[in-house]
Length: 81
Image (cartoon, rainbow, N blue to C red; front, side, top):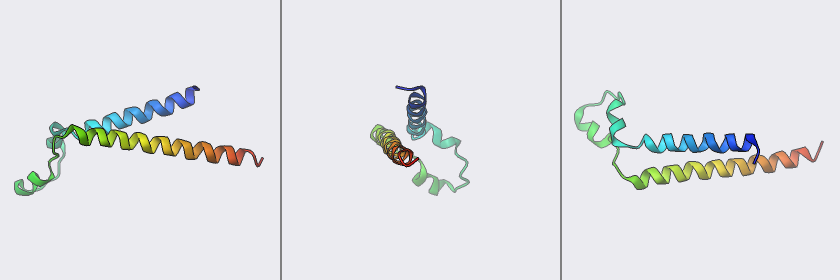
């Protein structure tokens, strides 16, 4: 595994962990939405660990698909030189 590949997967994993962590309910009060209290109850996130895991899995799946497409395109364009 090259340093570039390791860096790509490291950054993608960290990004997915941060995004999944942002689904926690304790971060919602820090969002300044300027909504009335009655509307705010419908906006607050539901604390479900499965949602965070699905978000993490989705981001990693997109990273894998993007990397596969990039490598495929890079190999096909490199053969035409």
